[in-house]
Amino acid sequence: MSDITEVSRLLSSRAQSVAEYLLPRGKKDGAEWRVGSVDGEPGQSLGVHLSGHKAGVWAEFNSGEAGDLLDLWQQARRVSLSQALSEAREWLGIVRPEPYREPKKEYARPPKPNCSAPTSKVRDYLIEVRNIPAEVIAKFKIGEAGDDIIFPFLLPDGTLAMAKSRKAADGEKPKPTAANCEPVLFGWQAMPEMAREVVITEGEIDALSWSAYGIAALSVPYGGGGGAKQRWIESEFERMDRFEKIYIATDMDKEGEAAAVEIASRLGRHRCMRVKMPFKDANECLVNGLPVKDMLELLANAAHLDPEGLRRASDFTDKVMELFWPSHDGQVGYRTPYKKLGDKLLFRPAELTLWTGISGDGKSQILSDCMVDWIGQGSRVCLSSLEMHPAQSLKRMCKQTVGVDRPTEKAIRGALTWLDQGLLLYEKVGKSGVKGLLEIFSFARAKYGCDQFVIDSLMRLGVDQDDYTAQEKALFELVDWTLANSVHVHLVAHSRKGDKDRGVPETGDIKGAMEIGANAFNIIGVWRNRKQEDQVKAAASEEERATLNEKPGVILNVAKQRNGDFEGKIGLWFNQESYQYQSSHDRSDWNRRYLPRGEAA
Image 1 (cartoon, rainbow, N blue to C red):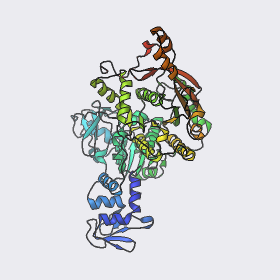
Image 2 (image 1 turned 120 degrees about the vertical axis):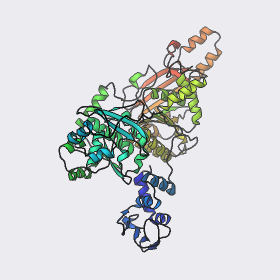
Image 3 (image 1 turned 90 degrees about the vertical axis):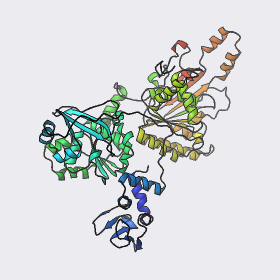
Image 4 (image 1 turned 90 degrees about the horizontal axis):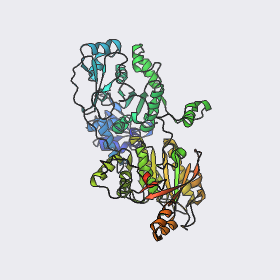
């Protein structure tokens, strides 16, 4: 992904071309590009290194200014760092992958709080109890409303996205002043324009405390923890582009660690480092008198949150306990919507599931039915249906969401809005290479927190059906990416059986290399009983037809489940009206709905 580190590296690799583009009136002098100043007039004062390990480094000797080519881009073009990044990407020909359909959320802008600059209790509390300097209070535009501290969450352009208030007393918790506000970081109003390093904290006062040490800081809006608590990343993803180093200084507790892991995994482990503090948070460091040099040393000693290596068995105690005794708020994996399976089959993080069967037996349709239910369970799914246009996929999912064959315009809009909470679609029909597809998936994982990915199908990944070596390589790439990102990938792979009457596909029936099935964590076979369908159509009476319909028309075979105890077959009944599958022939039980009845009308 083309974050600031990658853009800076690419610019340095083309240092002479960049120098000529930004400063066309200069000239080459040995291993440097020489010009008078960042304004571009002829001269010798400013030099840009064109090769070697210093390629792209520049300095202007008259002013003392120096930096890399992104700094030079800002100075020469008179633009902000964010704008310089955007222009540099365009110049380099880097295009960000964007989903066809992304989750949308309508946010409300809060009314401006009725407050003023702190002059009494708020000012006394922040300065005397929390040791925050008056100039820092002013820089962050902190407000006072009686005994309440007002923390304004301002965007870089000055827009008020959110505000929080709390009593000026220890033990109080800040709360939003208005509902349904956009989750953004606190502190952009105090961010130096040229800053390329930032500290992320777990509270507004901690951001003020780092600033008191002269270090740029932003605070997360909703504290520690992972998952939904870090939804701010969606809103701030592009704005965080500008930072080469992100120091994560969340609290030194379990929730702070969970937040650090989530933030680093989505913003990039290569530029995120965990800060270990001698006290619970930055404000305790400030109150206890830690000097600036000690805080700078904490940053210097910050470590990358690299993937874990060898561990002791006891290090996994909590995770093993969770597998045996899941907490009510824990998410071991996502279920299918079929009651007969229940928790017997779970789609867990860091696993790949193969869905197989002959063409037309319903693999993609059952997966679509599951995706709707997964969204209802809280999953965020990214679908790459290389065999079907997104609009066609959404037509089917609308029926499965609403539960009727011909939904009204109101119901269609309601279904699409409901799907927005957890569905992205990659608009590409045809063949797609694994590398390009994983770039799209990485973006969806990083920005939107997608935790399940669907590829339909293996034959559309640009691998020849007879090239078993290439198929094996493609599977290895998918599995490696799945493990590295702790997500679940569903891959549709056709069965090699051509005889439609030969029964339910097993692990050895997948078309292609043997390694395809061997490297999958789960294998699910789908078989449609076409002979029974013909018998139903030919039934001489309603009684005979009803008797035949008591038998399932589809068999779902859990042929392999590496991390589960269940393997076996269940029957499914297809509901032609809703395109849903049910695990009972009793139609009174066919009432699975995701929209309130009023919205589904």
